[in-house]
Amino acid sequence: MREKLKDIRSLSIDSLRNFFVQNKFKSFRGDQVYEWIWKKGIHDFNQMTNLSKETRSLLIDNFKINHIDIDFYRKSSDGTIKNSVKLHDDLLVESVLIPTKNRSTACISSQVGCSLNCQFCATSKINRLRNLKMDEIFDQVTLMDKQSRMYFNRPISNIVFMGMGEPLMNYNNMIAAIKKITQYRKFGISSRRITISTSGIPKMIMKLADEDFKFKLAVSLHSANQLIREKIMPFTIKFPIADLIESLNYWYLKTNRIITLEYIVWENINSKKSDINDLINFCKEVPSKVNLIQYNSIGDDDYKGASVDIINKYQNELLKHGINSTYRRSRGADIDAACGQLANK
Image (cartoon, rainbow, N blue to C red; front, top):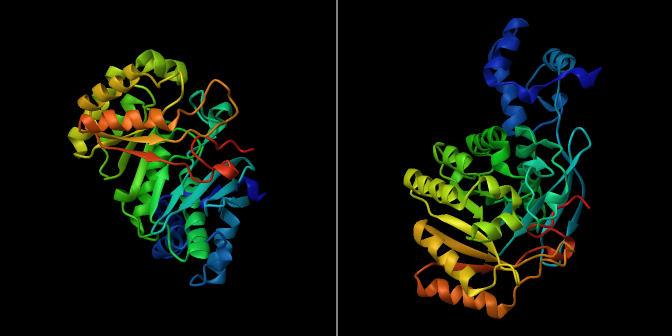
């Protein structure tokens, strides 16, 4: 049965070469197949037209190609496209294509559900069922690149790991996917145009800093007060802010790249003057800029987005202390595609 066949994309190029040699074929056939499945994104052995019928039959008898498909998609009034992506085992994740005037950004998922318990995020309400495999992460980028070319007449220009799941809790598959994405230049994207967004796992941030890539780092901070942070992101009880600061300074020391602090402001949670001061003190310790984010409701009355006046107070105080900040209005909120809203509804 084909279900029991090995997924060919789990093989390294050396393993593929060895497979062909063991079956009395030239080793370069492995290189050809590897190019078909990764550079050209082919999911059907019969479409590998430079292989003989005998070679294709050998592949069909020994391997399968698990791949993802878009189950359905919705398009926002602002052009944002949210995809419900079906995996080979019929589980679903969501990916979002975000167009602006000159860019198309692919927001991709790394887990089915999420490992963490951020109280304001819809994805955290879904138990983590499993990590995405390297090829499933890669395929999301392939699908959204095709979408961008179809609807906006351009390839994707940026990739953000800001979809479902905590990417640093699926570290090996995430890094392997980035290697594939950048290796073949299929998308024309360097690691400088890839942003990894984490809720803040100090040990893994330090590991990430040691990688030979130049991607960007964003941290979902939302409060620089440990007690408040534990309330809104309970998992952080294991990761004190002092440890987070240490890991971010290590990141900067190793990469010389500042960190983006993602920060939602809620009324009666982190809207006081003391909260602003805590953030300013945090920024003085960590080379960073602040991205204030519009809150997208998930139906929890405990969380209400702060008023424009409070946002302005944040920005004014940050500016007084020489800290760069922006205010990001959400895209795709009308189709539940904005930050924190991905929940496989």
